[in-house]
Length: 242
Image (tube, rainbow, N blue to C red; front, side):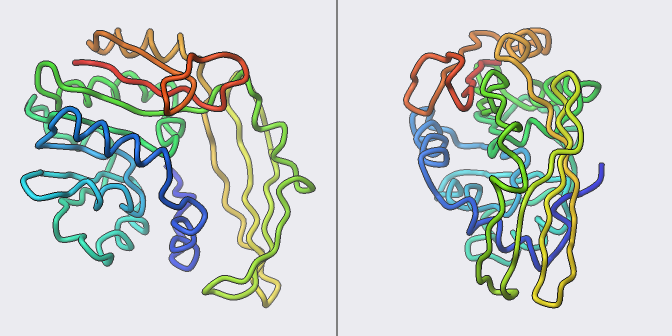
C-alpha cells in the first residue's frame, strides 16, 4: 500500500500531534491487568506506545508497513528493548504464544475490506489460547469526515522543519471508504500532499469479522472508560479473546 507517512521530515511531527494520553494509558493498563509477558503492537508507527510497553520481563514486537516510521522508531530512546518488523499482520509468526496484541491509533482503519479477514486471522494465530486482542476504530455514526474541510482543519504552526500551513481535503466517500488529502505547505511554498484511505466500519461489522476469525468474548465500548457505544461516541474500543 502507498505509505502516507513516507516523508522523513514530517514523521517526527506525528508524536507532537498524537501525544501520550488516555488511549495509550488504556493499553498500558490492559497489559498490566493481563500480566502480559509478550505483546504485539500492530501498526506501531513511531513506537511511542510500543517502547513504553517494553518493561523488564516483557517481549514486545512492533510491526508497521511504513519503513519511514520504523526507521524513526528505531532511533528513539528505549528502541533496543523492542523487536521491530517491517510489514503487516502476515509477518506475524503463527505460533500461538502471544499474550496480547494491540492495534492503536485507529490503524485498523487502514486495512482494506479484502485484507481484514486475513489480518484478523493472522493476529488470532499469533495469540495463545486465551490471549487478548484490543484495538479502537472511529465510529461511522459520528461521520467525522464531514468536518475534514479545508476551512475547519486549516492551521499554521512553527515546527522543527519550519513554519507549516496544513489542512485536510476529503476526496471521496463511498460505502465507508473515505479518501482524503493532507496538505503540508513548507516555508518555501512547496505543498507536500499525502493521500490516505480510511475504512469506517460499524461495531457490529467488526464484531462479526472478529468472530469469523476465531475470536470469542468480543466486547466493545464507546470510550476508554467503558462507556456504552452510541451514535455520539467518537470511537469504538474493542477487546476480544482468542
